Length: 171
Image 1 (spheres, rainbow, N blue to C red):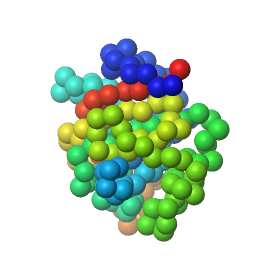
Image 2 (cartoon, rainbow, N blue to C red; image 1 turned 45 degrees about the vertical axis):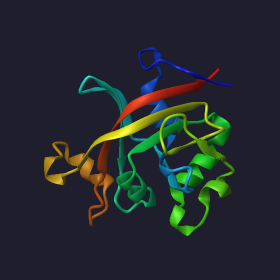
Image 3 (cartoon, rainbow, N blue to C red; image 1 turned 120 degrees about the vertical axis):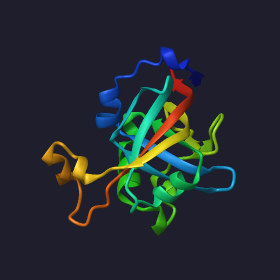
Image 4 (tube, rainbow, N blue to C red; image 1 turned 90 degrees about the vertical axis):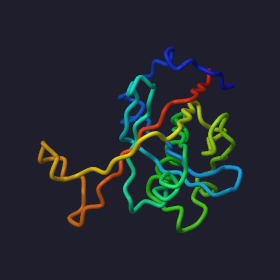
């Protein structure tokens, strides 16, 4: 059973949430059936411009890129550990190649207040309205090791900030 959590009362273990649990980033329009999802382990939650925000990054080569780029919202969903294999599949297979969501055995559903989908199996849903983006520029990497995260041809992430509109969490 999911319950609404006031943003200021939400207190996750942020580093574990992204780095250990992973999440699904979903964008597009659930009602039209035009959406995609991908597993993310990089991102942040915090305050920017006096707004609660979720910050995510997507490479232009990813199928989800066109959905987040053309949409006005996105969701972040976390899952119990038993869905780890599903998240692994969704992070390694492209939605261009077929219905990877069905193959993962997850059930997309309408989010409460944004067009992007959520998932019925999630135990955490963060709904966001896209408010800002910028592209990573390799000449601004101050730590040379950052460049090792990218192939020689680039494919540098686009960074998105979303205002958190709603958080729902399972018991």
